[in-house]
Image (cartoon, rainbow, N blue to C red; front, side):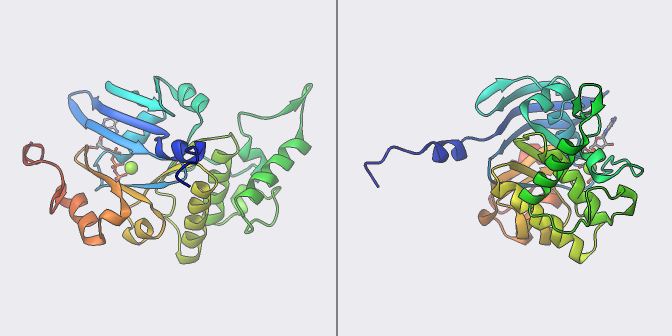
Length: 268
Ligand SMILES: Nc1ncnc2c1ncn2[C@@H]1O[C@H](COP(=O)(O)OP(=O)(O)OP(=O)(O)O)[C@@H](O)[C@H]1O
Ligand SMILES: [Mg+2]
């Protein structure tokens, strides 16, 4: 072993897919993100936690280029990049599944997965190739709960809709998939399905950011946890470094034992 060259897999896994340093974001006079540093790794699920209003959605919308950052630096796969708009993010392979999902009820699963990026043969839609790609993606993610990819989205359960939204994000050779509270509205069995899917996303090499308020979900599926407190990163650590009580303390007070924000950051 000791004589072997380090494998590219090892080096790739050690390098964050996304690295943020010193990110600030204000809306008017209100500063929402303060000096945010975050590392998101391929093959790993990072749970992004924090109280209501902590800045989680703002942070992911900054990463998606929807609310461009005011200052700070971004590296993607080791290269400095600008995220000035949604196209920049999409080009890099960053896909976000938002809280409200934005699926079209009156369209079927395939149509939703290709919405706005339809494949064509000449002037007509290439239905066969889109259907095949949609089915392939769902199979790769071991999604077995959908009866047909030609089902209307209006006929799907909440968990199945999440599944379609996540599969849609994966269809585009995405490298970083960000999920804003994918289990918030789901029952026990559907939450289970979505957590399994989140795990498979990471197992297929994606870097995954998973926003949740649910500590059970965090400890079920996350490899790392990043806690935001009033727009500051209180911790960005492997899940094995913290227990449930500590994560809750980080969320509610920005600090737990020797993990968390320094006293001067907690005062203002
Ligand atoms: N477009 C905006 N304009 C002005 N203020 C905003 C805007 N979006 C968010 N904010 C403010 O930024 C702060 C962080 O909001 P954000 O939605 O990022 O929180 P969150 O952590 O996602 O909360 P939740 O858990 O409730 O979803 C809040 O005080 C919010 O009012
Ligand atoms: Mg939010």
